[in-house]
Length: 310
Ligand code: DHB
Image 1 (spheres, helix red, strand yellow):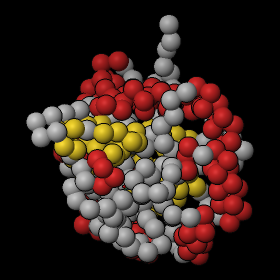
Image 2: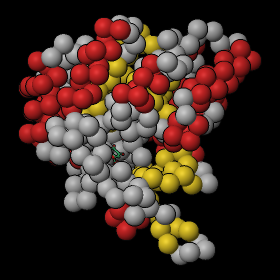
Image 3: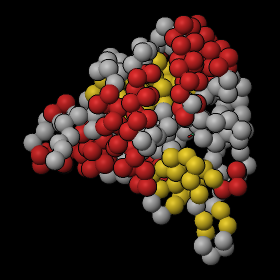
């Protein structure tokens, strides 16, 4: 039994795509509906469509990926229409809408559109895009984060979560959790890519992506220990009512097991989905089932959050 729930929505498996990967077009989103994913999230949307940064803007690396996409997306209405149409054809498939407005006003406008529509899924407000030149990540500005959440919850009365950047200092976890615990968040999603990293082609002495002089968000195996730490640290600090989507570095069933052991309710895959396509879901879930059987666990709840320390 691999089922899980997020804000009362039922997931047949704990895996889904990470926002940005395989979710920009209806074709890609339909692939997710037909996969072993338990839910899906749409590409982070802005009010108007965007073309994003110049190519090359994504590269595979020996142990993961680097990207500086720059928020290419079809605009909110495209994803909202897809979600509302899919709710009729696939009523049991949880859908998350990811939003990445470039100002508080733009985020509030998008939330008002969602609230005025028939949308019955979950909304994920992205506070951690590292790739729009001149736009610092909101998740690293704690005062701005509190201001935004205050305004958002004055406007929006439907289930809402936030996508966070990785934090690295235990004092930061204390500060951020103190702020988040003041709001009726349905969930947090941790982590976004580790931004900004730099990858170099030794032979040519060049960067491997073009935008921003080669700096970009790092994903994949490089970031798994950071993801585990963020899920664990927030699970230890957040109100139990705030659930956690764990994201970062899941390549195998063992990685998935570890994120759940740290407290993740749902787990997302980014780089591995980009590299393997939707068959990655079935492969990783089969590996998880084997580990659970070996250990004698029948459900995810049998080990969720139960990390042991020395
Ligand atoms: C993009 C990257 C992110 O990590 C994110 O959270 C949102 C957008 C991007 O470059 O498109």
